[in-house]
Image 1 (tube, rainbow, N blue to C red):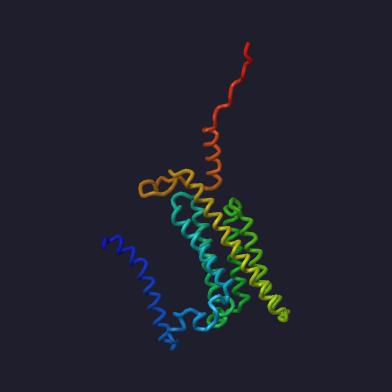
Image 2 (cartoon, helix red, strand yellow; image 1 turned 120 degrees about the vertical axis):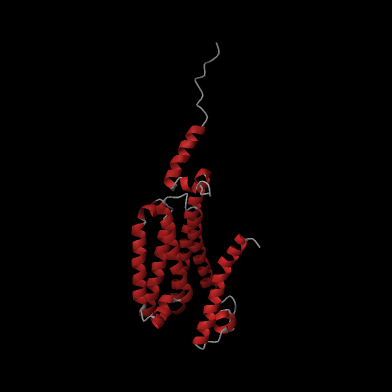
Length: 254
């Protein structure tokens, strides 16, 4: 097998093997049956496989958002302005936290049980991080289809308020309250994922319309740094150059 193929296989399989080793060691040290940490939760609990399907789909959309951010940043690193690259990396990291928080119930269970941090403090820290993210990348966000991002933040905020305030003050709301909380979160995740899909499409479309700016092994060092604004201007200039000349005056036959 070629050396490059061996390196690629090792880069994928070694971290995966390390995860298995860590799970095995932690399970043994804490006297936790290995099946509890490796099997599917629905199989362990003997419940229907579609139990919690909306939550599972939400996790998949979080994963999609993370993938879009990091993949776009990696592929277009030499073709986009540094600010856009940092924006994609920061967005990927923020989406990763939201993914792990939703998947493992970090702010609801793990932070309280293992770190002694109350839920409201975790959410307050998250709000500060999101505020810093919006403030730091405000100009870049303004050049993107930010309506979906605004909707995502609005729906996720509504979900948090219902969970932290309404369901605690009026627990008798029962299923209606839970539906409103989870429904708002679902819409927020969908809008979040959709926003980064649009941003990724915007950046790839801009780069592909000018192939010379795409990074390659021979041209990465001299690749033009693209932004959606610069590409819009370049496309307008190109269209003006390729437009057919206006016809001259037509004289009636004598």
